[in-house]
Amino acid sequence: MVKSNNKIGLEIEYDDNLLNELFEIALVHYPNEIGGYLLGKYSENKKTAIIVKQITALEYLNSPVSFKHIVNEETKNVFVKLFEGEGIHYLGEWHTHPNSNSRYSQTDFKALKKIAKGDIENPILLIVGFDKKGIKDYSFNVFFNKEVYKYE
Ligand SMILES: [Zn+2]
Image (cartoon, rainbow, N blue to C red):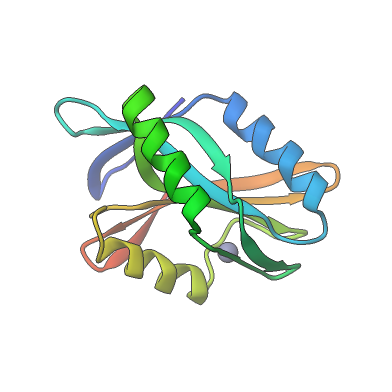
């Protein structure tokens, strides 16, 4: 699947299986939120962010209404190995909103803004709104020009 947003040139490419995978992880941690990292690469012309895989956060703090990942040494080592072995790197993150929709919160906005100050200019945040029956909706959000744009 490819998603685009007419205000940002960047396209996001991902495999539908990614959502199935995230839903299974979401159920394991229900009713708490859970999340992790999106890894992949940009196309040569930089127009497409290709999500290759996700990693569930190795260390985190969570509740039914919050999720905060902690980048520990082990996480850093995993990132280095993936970059050296598969040439993929951090593109952004994902987390779930149990019994809710995929709208980003004020906390989510601030977190993306903070990431954008680092190495990644336009970090992606994938939010999965779900309940026990399945994914209700999901959205890719990208920080661009001091704002967050939602991909439909
Ligand atoms: Zn959130």
